[in-house]
Length: 111
Length: 133
Image (tube, rainbow over all chains, first blue to last red):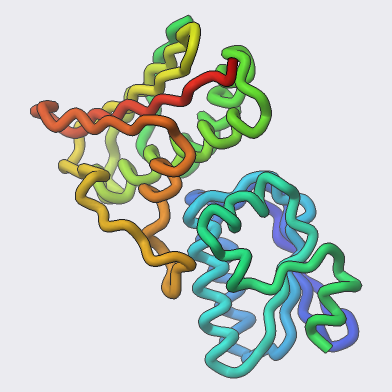
């Protein structure tokens, strides 16, 4: 998994590429924890280039959402491909996360 | 078609096996959605073996992929600690804490999940997905 991090208009943006699974989740978890340790208020995770997610990937996002909520921060996931969105839906997590169609839409959620 | 694999019980080997599984599912005639469901369910089962049966220690997993006329069957065998998916409670959805979704995903995505409780050494799980006719 490739994890790129940048900042735009006060939003911390993570761009992920590759499969998010049992093998790759620990690396993402570590980077997201480093970010929440700094209590970054606005976080956007772009999943456009993620074609596969398993329960370890879902658990990573549930955990980071919990951590962000603790300091009243905001998290939006964007650009989910249908197969990944489907896994969120099976776990009913589409009702828990803010899911945006694009980074522009996500920026509106975060404003 | 009947194909067998021996996989190392670690995250990297499971990830590599995913592409082989995709090829088999496609060759068996499953569409993209069904193929994705089989891949995810099998991967969750393999991950459970690494986590619960071998508990991070080294071990091997034998996977047998069987392409039948009306269904595909994936038989998964390990030699680790007993882990019966039937003993795992149904998760509360949506989950409020991380984890506990693996078995739920397997049961939701496959048409049949059989745990061979008579297996003396380790675990034997058989996952079945019906083909859409």
